[in-house]
Length: 201
Image (cartoon, rainbow, N blue to C red; front, side, top):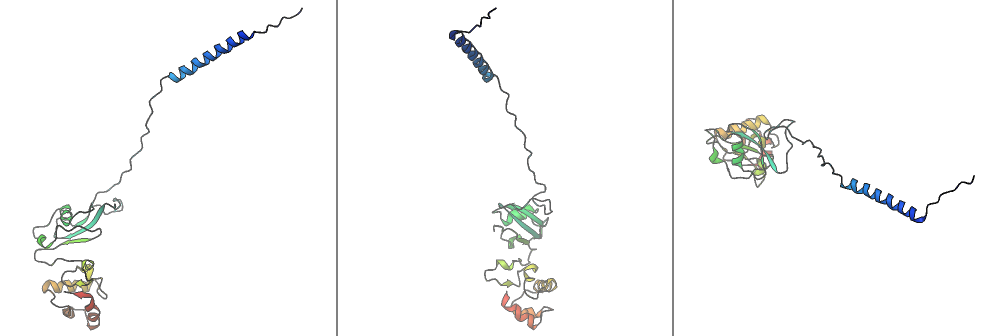
């Protein structure tokens, strides 16, 4: 028995290809028009810093370039270190530590002066001289009547004990001449000769 093999004509084959193309196109269109879910935002934890503006411990915030750190001491309510915005003035630092005490000599302090980072601001008592760091003097000399103990200790041969004696001497009687340093116990001729070109009154 002879088998008859059916061979589709070109029209039939073309129609089949067209049908397959239409079906595939419909599938693609349906997939493209299917609704898509909303994008999900993954939350990122915020970085926080512990401590307050006046915190001086290891957990305190690092010094920022837009702030100054000032040590306020003397006749104020709460002496300590404060952090203030760059360009803050002396009055801002005093306010940050609770203001001056009733016996504070605020009239002797330039409240309008702009603060510098790392400085120590000393608020004196009424009638007491205002301590001025030696670095603030234009000629580089240490003023015996206004320099604080830390500035006096920067002088050669002057330690904490001797600096305290100088402060005590000027409190009792202000220096009128640098030669009067020889009246301070512990300052001999050799040390006096070394100090004379470094101090003033």
